[in-house]
Amino acid sequence: MPASSRRRSQGTAVSARAASNESNAADIDALPQNGEEVYRRLREMIILGKLAAGTPITERRVAERLSVSRTPVRGALHRLEQEGFVESVGSDVDRRLIVAPLTKDDGGELWLMVAHLEGMAARRAADLPASRRKTLAQRMRTVNKDLSVALKGGVYATEPYNLDLEFHRLIVEEASGPRFVRVHRSMKLQVERYARAYFGTLITGLSNSVAEHDKLVKAVAAGEPAAAQHAVEVNWYNAAARLLRTIGEHGERGTW
Image (cartoon, rainbow, N blue to C red; front, side, top):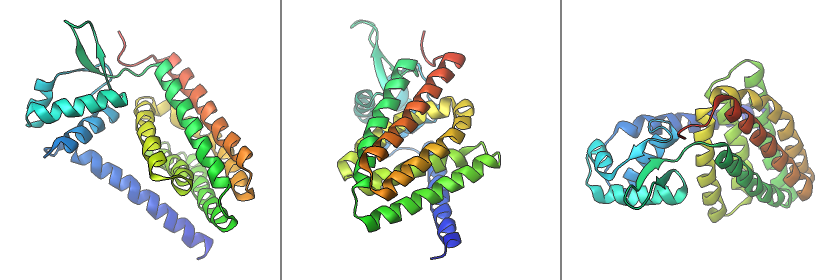
């Protein structure tokens, strides 16, 4: 397949995923039918900021808003608390649930956790057979080039963010098993909360990521596991530093 066709194909895939994300966001207004849907709806509302950080949450009010019984809401809130989207505050008598705040400590920890997860994935990717490494590296190179073009064109909207997500998704899903992918996805959904909340400032930092991505692509293509791990971890460490500066400048969300 010609390079231009591959780029169009990759771009179409990214656009399709972005359209799917937008469709999922639009579906938030549909009524949930079961406990899994209640969980997914609440999680999506938290990620998108429809339930802002620090917002109090009660079973009764959520059940009324979603037009469901309190039983699936109770299960969904318990699951969201385990995953870190919701947290309990106050004493036993005054205990209540709130949407987890967005803080420097939590954000920094999340970014570093993802850094080490993707470091493991990068090592595995660089250990793949040569033919698979070559194919993966070419796909990553194409997405990174599209990211560079979008940023140079001043497209500071969702396109660069989706392209960055796509770049990192490729290396994780190509080199990891389903358990690893599930854990990584859970962490990335937490990261997405911060990315959306501080989007305007963080998106400009993606320009630095293009060169960092190039180093990762070269290490994978060359079959250098240590270099691949180092490259992706540096990419995330630098992103964590930008996040902490941004929160420092604009303040935490949902704290008292």
